[in-house]
Each structure stands twice: as C-alpha cells, then as structure tokens.
Image 1 (cartoon, rainbow, N blue to C red):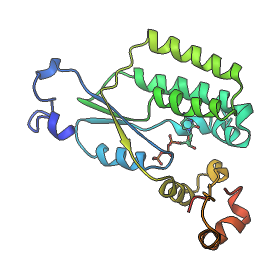
Image 2 (tube, rainbow, N blue to C red; image 1 turned 180 degrees about the vertical axis):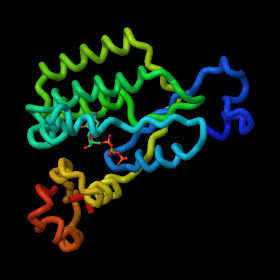
Image 3 (tube, rainbow, N blue to C red; image 1 turned 135 degrees about the horizontal axis):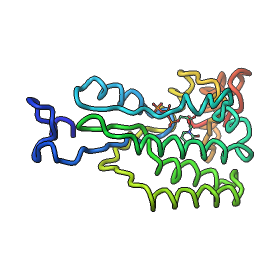
Length: 212
Ligand code: DCP
C-alpha cells in the first residue's frame, strides 16, 4: 500500500494532492504473531507514521501492572486491563495524523471483538463487566470518529506464536498455557508427550496444556 500510494518525489499520497485522505492501516494478528516486527519494518520508510501498541502503559500505570494482574486472575482483573486498553487505544486513534500514512498496532476493535469477547464467551469475564465495557465501546464508536482504511492480518499458527511468546520471555505471559490436541491414537499421543517432555516438566514454565 505504501509503495502504491506514495509519490516517491513528494512523499504525498498518489492521485489527489495534499487534500487526499491519509490512510490509516491497522496491523492485527495473534499474540506474538510478529506485529511489532512488521511495524518496525515499515517505520524505516519515510512518510509513514508508526504507532506501536501502548503495552508499556498497560504494564505500568502509576506503578500498577494491569497486564500482570490480568494474567494472575482474569476474572478479577480483565475489566481493569480492558478498560485501560480501550482508553489507550482511543488515545492512539484520535492522535492527529502527522504523516501521509499511519500504521498502528491493533485497534479498539480487536480489543473489543477479540479480547473482551473471548474473556466473556469463555466465562472468564462476569456479564456485568462485559456489559459496562460494551456500553463504553458502543458510545465511543457512535460518537468518536475512528478512521481505519485497511486491516492487515498476520496469519500465524498458534504453535509459531507460542514459540515466539516463550522466546521473548515477557514475564506476565509465562503463564499462557499450551494446548495438546489429544484426539489421536496412542502411538501419536506418546510421540507428542515425548516431544513436549521438557515443556511439560519444566517447573519455570507455568501451567501447560500443549499444541504439538
Ligand atoms: N492484550 C490484552 N488485551 C488486549 C490487547 C493485548 O490482554 N486488548 C495482551 C495480550 C498480550 C499483550 O497484551 O499478553 C500484547 O499482545 P499483542 O498481541 O497485542 O502484542 P504482541 O506484543 O504479542 O505483538 P507481536 O508479538 O505480534 O508484535
């Protein structure tokens, strides 16, 4: 999109001069799918403004680690984290555009339709918390102009994401479980247990449920 729409000479989007709408692109994908790497790649291009997700804010709100609390006890703290995620994503969406193209990590939509919905549907978020967040969300999208022109979804397998998540060692995420599909015959299952021997038995790795 950047190559197609930017004039190499002026850096302005092609086809409409300075009045042309500046496109906003959101990068979505699983946790640890490589969104940050994608953003870093495009950050090297002139005239693209890149907005990484404000994870550092979620990890330190005046000394409170909301991300850590959420992983410790989802039912108690998901509402707290997601309220703040919604606010910080809204802040990102409403920042004035400072370049011909904006690329941002995630969006207020994935916060709601992936994380909040997932917590609620998997019965880890009480209905009352879900309703409050949903009311806020509906009010925001009805009253605030949120421009998104393209969503790029980085498609990755849960296994690849899990591996990357382990490698990056973000403290709060070490509790994220691994699922082992167990519908297979005995020989295949024994192979899987063998393959995942260390992951299952390593005491530093937190709870395990395996996927390969
Ligand atoms: N998170 C959350 N609720 C949200 C958004 C994210 O609980 N609405 C959590 C999940 C992760 C952490 O925040 O523990 C960051 O997740 P992301 O997938 O947004 O970002 P990554 O850092 O995993 O991106 P990538 O590795 O793809 O660059």
